[in-house]
Length: 348
Ligand SMILES: Nc1nc2c(c(=O)[nH]1)N[C@H]1C(S)=C(S)[C@@H](COP(=O)(O)O)O[C@H]1N2
Ligand SMILES: [Mo]
Image 1 (tube, rainbow, N blue to C red):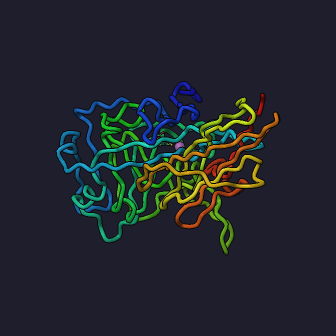
Image 2: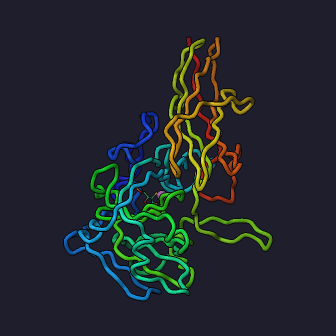
Image 3: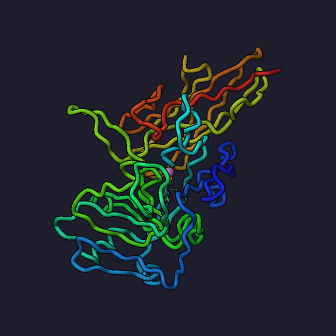
């Protein structure tokens, strides 16, 4: 893993190592804003409160005794690929590997909300982690803040999972032990780790991590408004070759990578080996599931003569969204899904 920050640990998978549809736990990126909180799982409780008929709480064993559900989901950090932004922007300088695909097992958030009985007036649920700390840079609230994120009630009822297992193992500490949310199709930020409290709210939450941070300006008829980052954007990335890799002339080289989107399926991946001048279809891997990436590959006949080539991958999804060539500046420091150039050296 590449260390982007030592403490709290922020680790990225070297994306050239991608070699399977499921990301092993040891290779799954870690993005944490605060140190891993100490959770004593014997006394730990998940509390559900706020606009509910009856506040409820669950111990770890009580949750484990409920009917379990398993789903596969890809999580991408909304800041993934930030190092490709020119000029440079602030934030962790992720390359390509702040993403992974795993199998998650847990209980459905909707089931638990039904046990608590949400009020008619309920609008959203706030997912609160046990981790907390002071935020350094203004604008910021005073004192300590917990990492927290809200999800609209509809989405919370529909497909949010509260997971206690990752790829069949107990959730590792850095990935949220004892319990984390998995919000399928959304950027990783919504999938709150070290869950301790779920608050049903009747008004928009507007917490730190969906306003000051992890939000973007969305244009509209009445002008731009600040909206939380939610659904993943359509994106294909090249795992191999890597940047500046030396490749032999006049050979067949297998270019490979992964592609994903939010709330839809990837239907096409194209590759350009001439900096976007022309495009050819890549073949998609067989393994597929809703909310998961697709692997892809393309056998490239490399040029006969030495020189530099710029490779680009481009994905299209089932909602007709095509990965853009250019960066949309309104997206600030997040949602980096334009086609990312990989330059290679063709040698003898
Ligand atoms: N409690 C808590 N949950 C969190 C975070 C965090 O710092 N604290 N980081 C979020 C972000 S920005 C991402 S991208 C994902 C990363 O999940 P992972 O570390 O398991 O890959 O967790 C999200 N959930
Ligand atoms: Mo993230």
